[in-house]
Every structure is written in structure tokens, then in C-alpha cells.
Length: 121
Image (cartoon, rainbow, N blue to C red):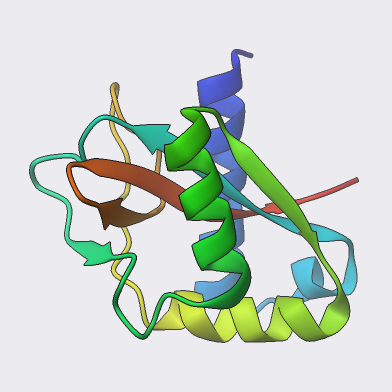
């Protein structure tokens, strides 16, 4: 399985778990991941990094990913996980395609990052 498939599968699993009310992922270690892109998918709804809904850990990983042009990850403690989960509930979700990962797309200037939760094993 290639990395993109793994990331997409993980992100979809986390979203599905949240949608179904299965919060098992909240009992284990979790990270926020931001994968940078030169632009957001044309059909994706996006949120600006300056939007008040984007704060804390999500903002940190998005800024790091865009500035370094590399995937950024931050492991969450229990308190952060709850706050981040609440923030994700407020963000539009893009299901992904052959070119773009699934995630909430956050933009800064002309750049974008797909942000999602990843369950660590």
C-alpha cells in the first residue's frame, strides 16, 4: 500500500468513526497531520488559516506544513485531542481523489494543506 492510500484510508476511517459515533480512536494515541499542496482541490470548500476556527494545534501543523513544504505531524494529548476533534466538527471535509488527500483543507495565501487525524498504533 502506498503512502497516499494509507493516509487516505486512515483519514476516511477516522471520519467514519466520528460520523458513526464510534469514539474508539479517542482512546488511543492520535496525531494531527497536515499535508501541503500548492493549491486546494478546485471543488473543495476551504478555510483560511486566519479564520478563528483554525487555532492551536491545527494552525501550528498547517503553518509548519506550508512553510516547510513537507508533511507536518503533532501528537495530541487527551485535552488537545478533545479540542481538535471539536474544531474538526466545524470544518468542511473533502473526500479526496487521485490527486488530493481526504481532509479539511486550510489555505494560507495561495498554498493549502489537507489536515486530518491519524490514529497511532
